[in-house]
Image (tube, rainbow, N blue to C red; front, side, top):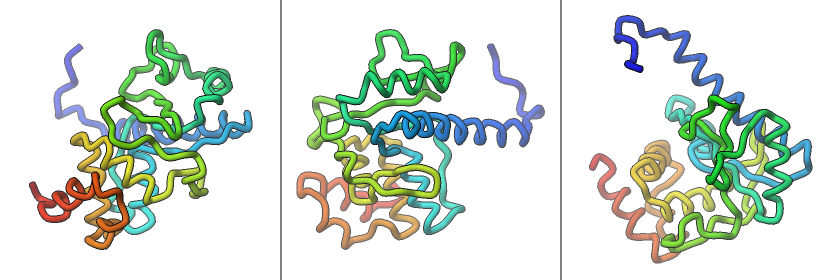
Length: 195
């Protein structure tokens, strides 16, 4: 299916899409809270929470939802998310589509606390204890989020780190607070924020 021509762009559809992402996040965390499952929001939504505290104009939208849980809570998480309308993707452990027509790019992605997200990563994801209560849900702490983004270090992780540098959440003093193996990655972004 071809995209509609630019002339048919609708600001209302754009706002609806942003609202749908927010509602997907809220439905997921409310289901976990109702089931008593410890969790922390990570990824782009965690970045948005931290950036918004400094500059709401610096918030970047992201379609997927990353949630950190403990592995022993996975089956209970699966049941809780199913009760909120999410479907576990066949063959994709940790990917929950938003209904039968849901797409992976806008899915809920489950990450396991204290485990590496990918085998090649230098460090595991943080534990749930490295989280705090934000306005509507629990979110990973800023130091934990910075470590996660530096560990993954994909293009979108680098963009999230640059957003946090831009609003002053990360600066030169942050380099001394992270594991030395990750420090060169952060230093590169601080030294070359436009590259």
